[in-house]
Amino acid sequence: MIQIQPLFDNILLEIEEVKEIGGIILPENRNDIEEIAKVLAVGGDVSKVKKGDMVAFKSWALDEITLNQGTKNEKKIIFIEEKNIKAKVVNKAI
Image (cartoon, rainbow, N blue to C red; front, top):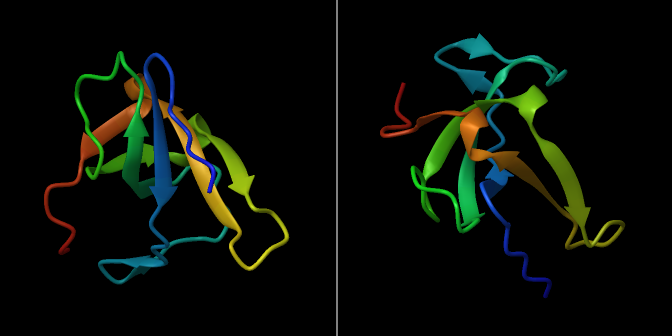
C-alpha cells in the first residue's frame, strides 16, 4: 500500500461523492462547484485542519491523482493548499 505524506501547506483529501445537497442536484462537471472531502493527511505547515476533518473547497483549486489505476483498488485522491480550504464541515446534515 502506498503511503503519501504531503509537504509544506498541502493537504491530502478524499472527495465525498455527494450528488445532491438539500434537494439541489449537483452537476457532474466539477469546474467551479463546492466539494466536501475528508482530510487524509496534512503537511507540516498546516495549522487549521487535521486528519479526519471534513472540509469544503472549490474544485478548481486542486490537483487530483489516481492510485492503483486500472485495478479494482483504484482510488482518486487530491492535494490542495491550505489557503484554498473554505471551511471545516461541522455538521453534514442539511
